[in-house]
Length: 167
Image 1 (spheres, rainbow, N blue to C red):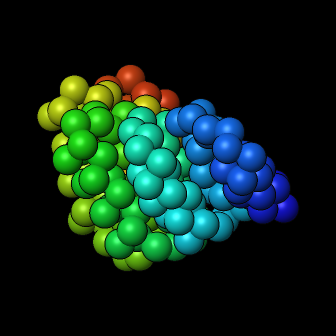
Image 2: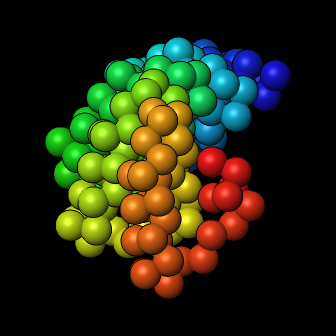
């Protein structure tokens, strides 16, 4: 797939003494995310550091999402925390991917808590973030809590979509 091609291109760059940059690595990590290759995404993130490149929010968003899609919630949350520790402020994409990872692993309380943390940190949730929290509640059989999140979403002028109602 595309992720394998991206990894091969990065490797080829290194063999030819061409220096890949953050954008090169971000593209490859994003391809790993789309190909559901979370372990390759983490490997690329490690390689990026070995090349003395500083990951940015795009790097972390792609890596957190790759782990979420690979159902590796522990890695997803570890990368989320790592971004914060590196003074990279999570954005709505980072939060949404981490909340989805929590939901996939039955950690609905953590997903709902992250929704609150988003607001406290000045990152307004969007429909995707709300849907991630509602879906996490649904997977945890927490219907009343899902309705609470739905009401909060509507009170904040976000309107449910097909994904919201299918959760």
